[in-house]
Amino acid sequence: MLGIARTGIQVTLASVARGNGLRQLCSGGSGSYKNILVEKKGDKSQVGFVRLNRPKALNSLCDDLLRELNVAFREFDADPSVKAIVLTGSSKAFAAGADIKEMQPKTYSTVFGTNFINDWTEMLRIRKPIIAAVNGYALGGGCELAMMCDIIYAGDSAKFAQPEIRLGTIPGAGGTQRLPRAVGKSKAMEMCLTGDMITAKEAESAGLVSKVVPADKLEAAALDLAERISRMSLMAIYAAKESVNAAYEAPLSQGLLLERRLFHASFGTRDRSEGMSAFTEKRAAEFKDE
Ligand code: CAA
Image (cartoon, rainbow, N blue to C red; front, side, top):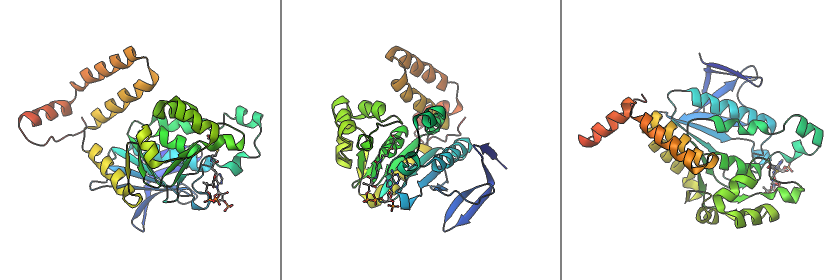
């Protein structure tokens, strides 16, 4: 039994429940998650699949949802059978932002004193790739959540925006920092200063999303991508994610050095040897994540 006690929620793999084709992990004591659905998908069940599931509030990101999301991500990160994760919402909303009704009564001393939404950054410690599959609204914190993922696929009806300015505030979970890196300063500034939405096609041409597909094909496309990644060596997956992320954090010289050292380190893995042998022997590589 693998148990993780975090932020008051106890999750056990032994408590996996089956129903409606879903394997829904249970949060101890209180039954299943309340705000997300969690299952493993793909031919070899190598894809961790998380669906935001607060339909009445358009998947707005309340504290409880974030707590559950962090637990689910950590479970998949620790599960050796899972190699990539897909995060999605509903056809109407990936997520309509932080929960405005929950935030409305908060004061400066409350949010500063509790370091409000600091737990949103926990997902940045997940080592396996997370693919955001965005249909419908990805607004405010919803857009920021998608940008904290590693790859964004969008359905053709998706809409992205940072509308916080219309609430008299600004993005608080990375919108003013990650959006300019994705779409450039001018478009990011326009979005943050007006709250205007951009379409999936605009997001693709600006570089925010890597692929747009018909809305009803989105989950299959994201799952296909996750399965293709899952066929690689987990050692190389970790190294590639770490190295690409360094491009955001480190000066070029340090990023290049990290990349070179991780490249060198891959020569210590069984899978690198197997991958190159398979190429020369004209056969498919059999990776063992070693
Ligand atoms: N927080 C709380 N509740 C929300 C919500 C949010 N972010 N977004 C939608 N809802 C609720 C609505 O209040 C409504 O609930 P009731 O039925 O109880 O009234 C329900 O979801 C359905 O919403 P609408 O009736 O508004 O649906 P619509 O189709 O007419 O409009 C929408 C959809 C354009 C997404 C609109 O709901 C909207 O503008 N939502 C707010 C978007 C927003 O401002 N997001 C930024 C939040 S701040 C933030 O995220 C800060 C940060 O950086 C961390």
